[in-house]
Image (cartoon, helix red, strand yellow):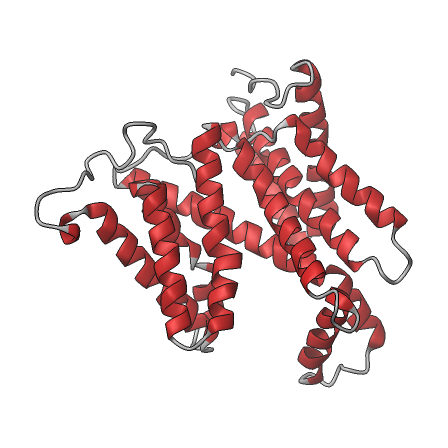
Length: 322
């Protein structure tokens, strides 16, 4: 999760323009290097090169390094350069995919972190941005046969055809119902992981302070979003609920992350903390669905309780001291 601790007047401290032209400006150099690396990673994945999946999920890392270390403008320049390079390489669809999945979200997350001074708003955006993308895709594909669901069904059938499973109508239907949510989930986790890794790397280099996980508390108003999506899902016609269900699932991701952050806060300084947290993360790996639902429930409880203790305010109660 990105956060820029340089603060007003300190952004890019030690990185002010120097004599010698643009090439002597560390911010421009960082933006250029980050854009080039991000484009290489994206093209490596789009061309089907070895370890392309790993390269694809690492695309946001250089963007976050540039933005968190040298300011929001550096991230914007890096994202624009990377998108341009991918487009010039002959993959216009890849350029749009890069910008929609990583370029624009990384910039918005960093801007939100700087504006709010914490991780609460960026955490909420990890659910709101995928949800907005799903709604936008549904509107854009509304004129296509079957809309977004029809497009996902065609893509799923084409993918399963290579495994001789194209005739499994039930399997296709189940995949289509959660496919958009699964994509949003993995993109949100990729942004979170790369933002955290960038903050850790910059902290080790002494360039920026590490992100404060204790400030990862959702604003109180966020509870309305999954509630509305759940209502839309209940009202959807049977067999045409893929979009509402996907909205519910992606909007629950920040609540799960909020629950994990609350566990970290409330177990701080207590005996057996490593064992408890290790057990929770191991359970997430082995039994993801029931454990994640339990963590989501705990996150929702903590969010509502914090909002109530704060008189309905958006920031919630301060973390407990230990």
